[in-house]
Length: 444
Image (cartoon, rainbow, N blue to C red; front, side, top):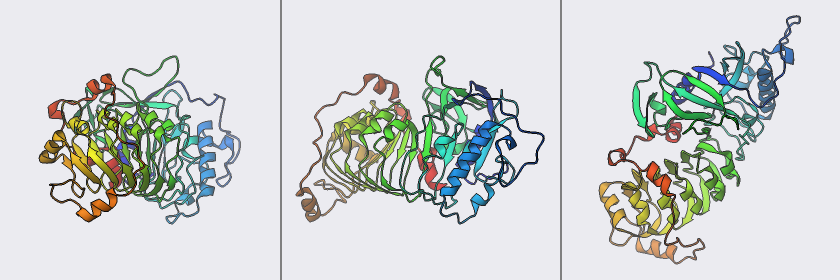
């Protein structure tokens, strides 16, 4: 495929996705006979349905053309290649990539859209990525897509099952009880690749597309893994109130201009969300209790925002979290000792960043983490600690009215999740940030 994938992460992902081995069932679209005409001349400017190899490619063409009309700025003239019927050509439709679906002959379909660094401007993504039924990978860093709106991704019905049996896959690791090998940039996907992937049965060799149906379900341990990676896109406005119903597994919206609170619906992603990157926006409001329900999430980074309130007691339920960054906000109160205990037998916590807030005390478990270099509480208001805010600054903030609810004394965590997700002592080691999907996207 000549359409260049510029970033290492995107190349690795597309390389894996190109190993498609089998497709079980078809998408929810009605199956119709769709044969290209052999008796007419194809118009490159205004192609007709019969000019396309199959109905899926014609549908993708229609969606792309509709999105193209909404683009208001294209400094690299990328959309000038989005013309004609040859969506999967060598030099056409730059940014879009196709995969043949085994079991459907040589038919191709659009499975990835990688628009990183194109500098495109458009008012929204709604009606674009949610209308490409076979899309498995979408990346679009360094663009400007206006108001943030999570498209309805429920129509993207395919799941991928990854096997890796190739000498190119040099880095091996253990993930959630399974041994597997993956390219370095995506080494810590916990058995998932960006797109919709089944995480069960990782073995080494190919990628299989499997459709989830009520009859067959998905094999034990499988997870829908949909990624939304929109760092550096000048996104504005609030996070959608219904974002939790999108069932995302990877959410990266760093370095934008998002405002308002983190929606309580975030709790509905408790069975899907693996990594969340909200750093360097303008998010405000109380730190929501619902974040504590994300018991499968390994990265929660909401640093450099305007969040306030105490840390909810529910955060002690984050038994899978490895990287927790709440630095650079306006949080206050005591750092919960139960949270710090997640660096012990109860969890996997390897890094806890709370610097640049207004916390006033820590307990014994947290004090131990400070000594171990796991917990950073610099520039807070903790008496007797070094590198804290000045007394006048602390007094000024703490004297202001506080409207966030106080943290409850106790919270009941799902015992099963805690037992399953807790790491062995040797597993609680800080990893390189680039080994996480959402952090890797910051450097693409």
